[in-house]
Image (tube, rainbow, N blue to C red; front, top):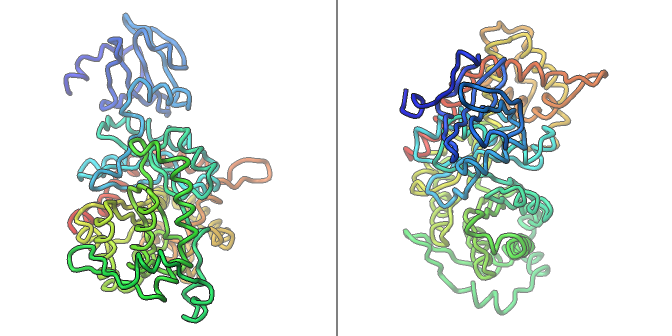
Length: 490
């Protein structure tokens, strides 16, 4: 027991609860605040003259006025004011940052235990608008869950909050108004996907290169370091212009309107990865250089790498080619002074060492759905009957879910859960098709209701995860830790 715990003047004989020791904090008025579990619910106890600033039930404990406060949005907002370490900060400027999407709002403890063991900075609040729509949450919910997790765990190194894959100005504005410290701008709607199918003649007909572009790029040798040289011919330059020029203008407009005056408070990430075809290194250079010419300052850029970064499974593609191109992409990022961002980074174990090596340990990797998969593995381990029920419902929802995600799932390869023994059900999470089935159907599993308006699974699932939260933390720490271990080894 540390000195802070010893000094806590709370009489637990008068109040039956289970304390979270790492959450004990002094208030600036000499009072105290800490989190505890009572009657199966987590709550905040505040002692002293400032207790009334939190909303909840008032009571006396010893000489102190106290408030038993729920983990509400209003109380989370007050918490961030009273304890600044529970508010997000920009973290992409750190060497190793790691995005940890939490679709359920309960993964924070496992995530923090994982990053505790590595010199990496977490982006704990990270969700896309698509994920929010499918889970019926808002960015307020995502940020609040992160703040409570940080306070409960006693994490003080700083965490980020990412408005992930935002496509519209109003979405950027929404995230910034809530205090999010990272904006990931998704440029996919401004990137052409038909250009690589054009002949050189067709590309020339569509794009007349300006004298300015020719002077800037043609017959030039751009040394980005470590023997990597970028060169353009007329055809490759035309294709860069055709594919990315509208995206560059979109990024520039958003930066000038929302980010330019806040670069000390907000990390700006550019995502050009949500496209069918890979970003060639020279195309990466073109985008970065055009942004620089327009005065756009970015913290990270996410190219579309060769091969496939599908959800919830390992890298699909030529690992040697990936390694070769990663070397150049990493050199380009260093040349322009930002970090590479690797999206859909969950479970890409075969290429983590390459990423770590070529970025020289300076990277941002995003994960999200893998934490949901770990949660569902806990269901398979602890309640086989419920898991079978969910799994069979996921099969009926798979076709609808496919419109949101690019996956190569073959559901005919997934074993029939009704013929499997209970002990074998967790093994489904080592099978790619089963992983992707559960990965992409989360919105239907969590949100669908019966004809009486009751959730089909949501309430039962959350009750199970609460009952088995230590098992979830253990599995999550191990799984996320495996990601970080390979990245740091590389």
